[in-house]
Length: 442
Image (tube, rainbow, N blue to C red; front, side, top):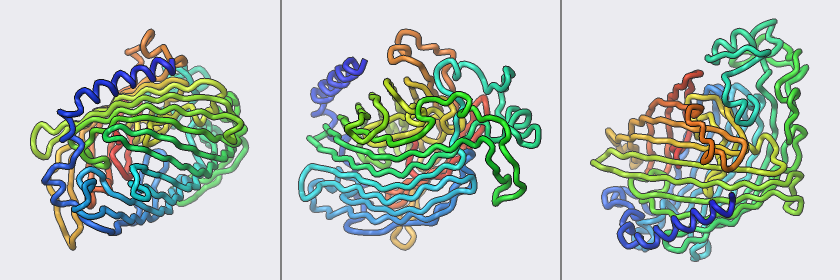
C-alpha cells in the first residue's frame, strides 16, 4: 500500500510539472499583500489566553522574532519570512503543559535548504483515550454495555456517578519531552523532507489516583475503578522511547504559506521507527495530504483539505492517532486541528481519513502603531473516519460511519504571519471551543 501511495504522488507531481507554467503566479504573494509585507527584523508576541473544551483555560506567553529580509531579495515575494523564532510557556487549568523553543529558517547559509527545529516539554495530565479501531468508532460512547449519543449524558451517568469513581475512565497522564529536526530542500515548487524526532514517553493511568475538581482546584476524589486504558493495555501502555525518521516530498503552489488565498499543496510523508533510530517500537506510517485554495472574489476565499494516513507494525496507541503531514503532525480525529466539535483523539486507528472545507471572509483590517491586523470570519465543515487496514477506505469505505462537525469563528492575522483563531465547533455528540494559533488546515 505504501508503494501505491508513492506512485500516486509521483503521478500528481508529474501533472504539477506539466502545469507549472500556468500556475507559477499562484506561488507568489499578490501585489496587494506584498505591498503590506514588512521588511527586516521585527518581534510579535502576546500573552496566551487560551480555552479548549479538552484542556480547559490556558495561560502563558509566546514571543516571536521574524526576519522578512529586504524587498530587493528575489525570494521576498515567495517566502513567508526568512527566519521565525519563538519561545513559549503554556499551561492550562486541566493540566496540560506545552513549553517550546522553535526555529524555522529559510535559505540556510544562502542555500535552498530550510531547517525547522524544536525542543518541547509536554505533559498532559488528562490525555484522552476512548479506545481504538474501526469497531470502536462505529458505536457511540459506551460503558457497561449502555450507549450514550450525547457526551453530557455519558458524563452525568458514568463519569460523575458514584462519587466520581469513574471520572477519569477515559483519561491518562502522558509526559513526553521531545526534540525534532527537519531539513527541507526546495527545487522551485518541489520540496523534499528529511527529519528525525526523538521522544521519551511516560504513561501513568489514573487508576487509584486522587484528583481535584474545579477550575482552580477544589474537592478531592479518587478514581477507584479501572480506567479504559488499564483494562485494554494497548501497545505502548508502558511508554518508552518513541523515535523515528521522516522522509517526505511536497508540491507547494500556495501564494503565502501561513495564510494562503490561492494555490494548492500536496504532500506525502513516510515515517519509520526502529531500534537503530533509538526507538523501542518498530512501525511505519504513510500520510498523504491535499490542500487547495481559491479566491473567487476580493476578500473571500475557500480552503479545502483531504488527508489519509496509515500505520502498521508495533504502533504505540499514542502514535496511532497521528496525521503526520510533511510540515506538521496533528492528533487523531477530534480536536481543533482535525475534527472540530469532537474531543481530542476521540477516534483513532491504524488508518484514518480526513476532509475539511472552510470559507473565509476578510471584513476589515487596522494598522495601529505600525502593527497590521486583518480580521476574518470563518465557516467550516469537517469529516473523517477510521479503519483497521490501509485498503479499507477504498474497498469498504463505510460512508455512513463518517463523523461530521461544523461551526465557525474568527481569525486574526497579525502582521500576516501570526494567525490567531477563535473556533466554535459542533457535532452530534457535543460542542467544543478553541482559541489558539494557526489555521487548522495548514
